Image (cartoon, rainbow, N blue to C red; front, side, top):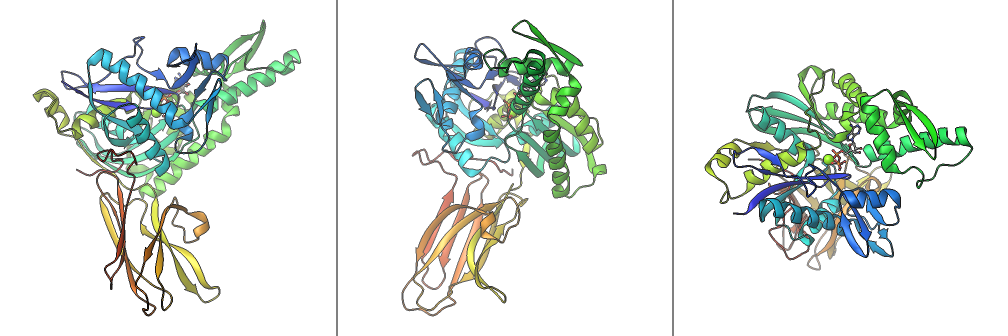
Length: 496
Ligand SMILES: Nc1ncnc2c1ncn2[C@@H]1O[C@H](COP(=O)(O)OP(=O)(O)OP(=O)(O)O)[C@@H](O)[C@H]1O
Ligand SMILES: [Mg+2]
C-alpha cells in the first residue's frame, strides 16, 4: 500500500511525515533515527552525500558542499561543489531523492507527496520546487504554503476546538513567514500572509559568527577563519544561548565569552524587520489586535527567547509553541497530502481523521497587465492595471475590457504582471509572462480586448486575452512545470 507523505523542504533542515495507522500525523525519522535532516549536499570520494555527514563536511570546508540553496530556488545562481556546478533545483532534487529513499526504506513506497514552500515564494521558485520533486522521482500533485501547513496541524491537533483568528509565526533557518488565519472547527482560512525569504536562523548564525570574530580579534589580534570556527560552531553557540544567558566558546585554546544580550544586539536590525512585517500583516488582514485569539509558533528559530518577546510584544499574546516546532510544517503537509488524495490507500480510521479538514486561502500578490493609458500631463503612458487583488479569495476570476489604441493595429502585447503592492508604475512590477496576440488587419481603433484572469483551486493562473470582434484569443496557464508531467500542478491556494 503506497503512502501519502508531507515533506517540509527546509532551508536548513527537512522533515517527512505521514499519517500513521491510528490516523495521526507522525514524523518519519531518518536513517540516524533523527526527526529532521540537514538540507545540505556535499561530496565524499566523488559521491554526493546528503544530511548530517554532508553538513559536517560543508561546515569544515564549504568548497566541498552546498547549503541554504533554497533561498536561491528559481534563480540562475549556481553552487560549486569541488569542481562541478549545481543549480539550487538540482541540489533540492538531491535532498528530496535522499528523503524519498530513507522514507521508503522505513515505510514503503511513497504514493504521493505534498511539498511545502514559503508563502511568499515567487512563481519561479515554486516551479523550481516542482521540478526538483519530479527530478527526485516523487509523485507530487500539490505544493502548499508552510504557514498553512502549520495552521492545519494546529487546527487538527485542537480536535476542532479552535475557533477564532490566529497568527502563524514561522521563523526557520532561511525564511520568516507570518500569516493571519481564521479557524472555525477544522476550517482554515488565510486572511493575510507575508514573508521575508532571506531572513532566518542562518543569518543569525552569521551575525553571531561576526561578533565572535570581533571579540577574538580584540583578544588575540588574529582574524578568525571559518576553519578555526565554522558557521556550524556558531549555530551550536546560538542554540546554547537559547537556554543560557552566556556561552563560552573555545577557539585555538582561546576562550571567547558571548552573552545573550550581545547576540540579540547583533541581530537587532533583523528583529526590527520581523516586527514591522508582523504589523503590516495585521493591517492587511484588516483585524484589530484584540481580534487575535492566539499566536502559533513554527520553525526552529522561534526557540530564541527574544523572538518570543517580540511576538508577544506585537501581538500582545503569549505565543503557543510545541516541543516540535520544527516538525509542525511537515505534519500539516502530511495531513494535507492524505486529505487531498483519492483516499484509496487510507484506512477507515485514517479517512475519518482527515476528512474533517478544510482550507481556504487568499492570493499573496497582485496580478495585472500592462497597457497604454492616457494622462493629461504625460500623454500616452505605459501603466499597470491590477486584475487580481492581493488577498482575493481563491478560486477567483476577473474580467476587464481594454481597447486597441490605433487604427490598423495588428497585435497586442499580452503581459502578465505580479507585484507585492498595487502598483500602476510598470517599473515596480515583475512581468511573469509576455506574448503577442495577432489581430486582423484594417480595423478601426478602440477594438475591445477582453482579459480574464482566473486562479483555480490548484493554484494555476489561467489568463485569456481575447479580441472580441474576431474571437481570436491567447490562453495562458501559469505554474505548470514544463516537464511533460501534466498532473504536476502547483497548489498554493485551495478552497474546499
Ligand atoms: N534552540 C534553538 N535556538 C535557536 N535556534 C534554533 C534552535 N533550534 C533550532 N534552531 C534554528 O532553527 C533553524 C532551523 O529551523 P527549521 O528546521 O524550522 O528551519 P527550516 O525549515 O530549515 O527553514 P525554512 O523554514 O526557513 O526553510 C536553524 O537555523 C537552527 O539553528
Ligand atoms: Mg521551515
